[in-house]
Length: 384
Ligand SMILES: C[S@@+](CC[C@H](N)C(=O)[O-])C[C@H]1O[C@@H](n2cnc3c(N)ncnc32)[C@H](O)[C@@H]1O
Ligand code: SF4
Image (cartoon, rainbow, N blue to C red; front, top):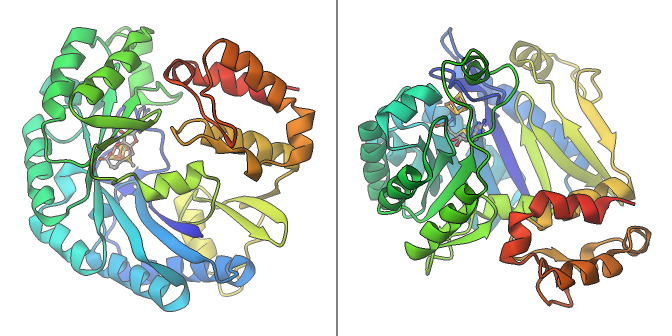
């Protein structure tokens, strides 16, 4: 099974912390033209890599795909249904910024087949939303979640914690309130200060505080989620108990399934026979549009990065992705030579002595303590 990711690169405004491949769109968009270009690229990937695998998830991410007219979403989905084998219980997600979606637009997306929305709430404190450079207020975000939850039964939100100046006890209070919203899933990310972002400049100039390096933020987050009936199933992702509404799309990444990525800067992991390729499409939006529009366009363009992955690369990526989840990494899916080369079983014994790994013969699964030391453990397991 495989998944499809569609990258919509436009936003209403650029948030201060964000280094995603997204820009503010200044001109009007011809959505049918854009559809044609996305279709061209999807077709190109399909011609070279499709082997009749079933598509289990389609994800419109960005940027802000909820800004796009439904005619684009509808056409893309119809085309995928027409040309790929699609699973009956496919998950189709659209990411939304609270300022770009209302009940009417959500219903349009739903009528085209979308069955899950992921809303960028980030915080429900107005001053913090300003520090993050968000264009919506706390009221807008909360109203949006209520409205969208009337349309979709599967609503996820994104929040960011360990924000400049944020105190642990304030986060605890805020999170307790956030988890009362009508949602089935929540992604909670610690703020990362990326190079070349406006927030980095504000911090460097002393205009706002740097985030603290208090590791208790993550512990507190897990604890409060649990007490509000949300289960952590991945280091940043939580599902409401009893719903089973894990993100199928993200699970497929963590399981190391194949995926088709379409759009500027989109990544794919696709195979031909036993060869697995990592593909990154042209990041520059103007160049990507010109490439996808040229009559004799080929994947092998010097601005696309196409890399044949080695067994070492694959082994490392499988551990990096799989150890993030409560399901862990299935040992049967790992290459035997790599297991020997990196002395996996010896290392698991050492980790067990420190109670970082749970006792499980078929998979490597990190314990709660192990999750808190995720980066260190991944480095240990993937070093020769
Ligand atoms: C594509 S955006 C989600 C949809 C929409 N563009 C929005 O922001 O409302 C993806 C998510 O990544 C998270 N994110 C982006 N940059 C981040 C950073 N530097 N640190 C932590 N989280 C970040 C935010 O929570 C954001 O909602
Ligand atoms: S966080 Fe979302 S809305 Fe903000 S700039 Fe990034 S992609 Fe756009």
